[in-house]
Image 1 (cartoon, chains in turn cyan, purple):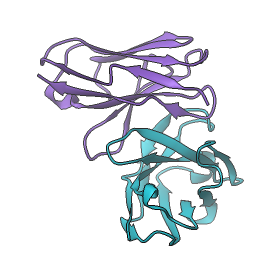
Image 2 (cartoon, chains in turn green, orange):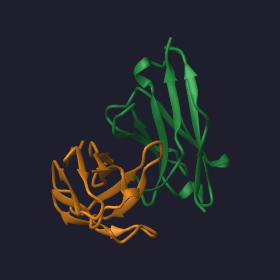
Image 3 (cartoon, chains in turn purple, green):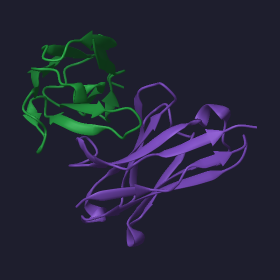
Image 4 (cartoon, chains in turn cyan, brown):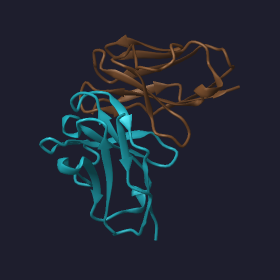
Length: 120
Length: 106
């Protein structure tokens, strides 16, 4: 069974750094792109970027380029999303999702979500 | 970015009704479109891929159609468990989502 398990909820202050994770199991992790999707409170889904664990190729959505860093460690089947300086507007639920094909495909399996709250 | 415009943004219907949601792309995306269901407090779930293919295990009351720039998602007979927000997503370029359609029961 394909599973993506994300790290737990985080409460941070503005200006702090953060790295959240997404661990895949039940499939060959290196062979599938992993996307990160933001959902702000009461709002829709936004793809932030997508990483290919086999070679760490990354595609960022224009709105998120330079705002976050996406990475993957193929040796431990884990993808990451990190911020160097959080803002209150980063408060959101963040999902990782597996792409069925290449980075232009369907997301057929999703993590449970990581809630990030940024408040002073 | 390819912009995806869904309508309506919300709807309310009776159990057993036929429900239709539309999604329009800002440019031709052939049939590179998926539909997802997101129930409150849960992660999204893939329902339809490549515009009209039903994901394994998804009830047959869900269907999709369309090509080019105009797409339709239909629930043939609305059930109480279908209360959710539905999103279209294009993948002709780096994926983008529609803004969502919230469906509830009258």
